[in-house]
Length: 322
Image 1: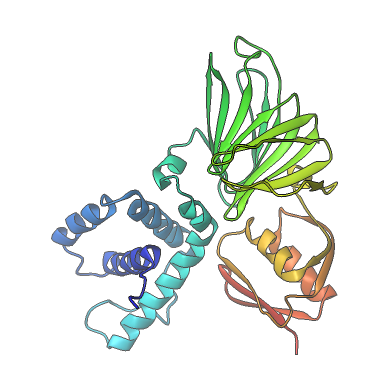
Image 2 (image 1 turned 60 degrees about the horizontal axis):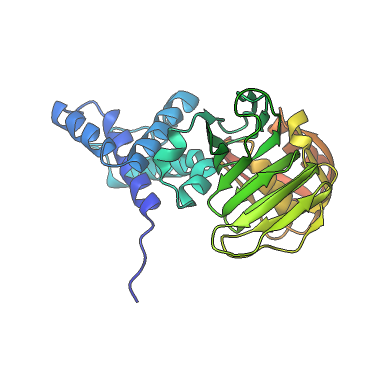
């Protein structure tokens, strides 16, 4: 069987190589041209390189133990340096890796009208008075026309509060993800596209769900939630009361598995946040202020039998205390 090569892993290895070369004393003019050519090869190359540059800004420099010249040193040192760079690049890329998994091209994300970075939230008011709150790591574009009002959500999470002002206010209002469309029926709702489908929670009014490859549609009403793929709609469930708590900067948990809690927390901080399987089933409850994710990790260590092991701030593991 032919082994499948992960294109992101290959690009990250290449980025680590170029980052190391760029800071070598003998980085030549020819290599500078070659680096520019590599960056221009694809949107993914440029995306990863931007994260590599963020790495330099955030870290200041490569750690002394691996900060050796690329040439003229033992091979093992070069390998250590490149491995650190690759791990750090993966850590910086992790929050955006989900975006690259969508069928939409990455360039659509980076050319979106509205975006938020990791841990960032913002609210925008559209031409019709509709208010849209973007959660961490989100990207969307908006198009109003005589045919309707459309939000294309490429990744992340939004809360929509529809309004009807302006010349397009009477037109139907849609939110489109890779899985299908949702039509707002005078409403307030949360949309979050994920790998397994788009999650929809309706807070007020109602929303009609229309998967791309299914003939059926359903109406989800206030207090309800569902998830749908391009070809299927899951059964309607009761929406949790705190589904929009993130607007207030709060991560709410009610008897949540620690692994699931950390996966949610990881959305709001750069890097890798790993949960050891020995503690994955511990339970977490409470309301946690997202403005300080390090503080949340410290609270977990105080209230649960876990320890926080930090390789760098961008690589954290939560494991058994013993």
